Length: 90
Image (cartoon, rainbow, N blue to C red):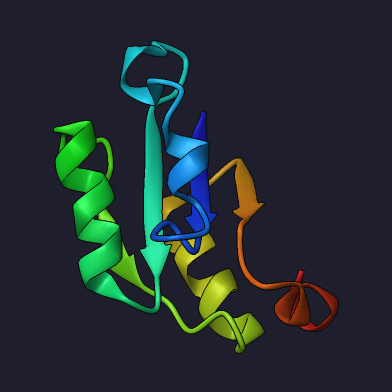
């Protein structure tokens, strides 16, 4: 399974605490965030750049979310953004 985690920094960090790198069925989690430094911090803790790639995303634009989902051919989009974006784009 491939997952696009939107807002992988502060908001999504808790979603990555349950050792996703030990889940064999989880092929990839794309760590997408507006703040690349926060996403890279999570990636560093997970320790696998290929399995946990980092991408910039502006979640206020639905087309950005859709483009990343298509780029990685994800099975699931996981929303960890502020609720203001939920109504508009997810």
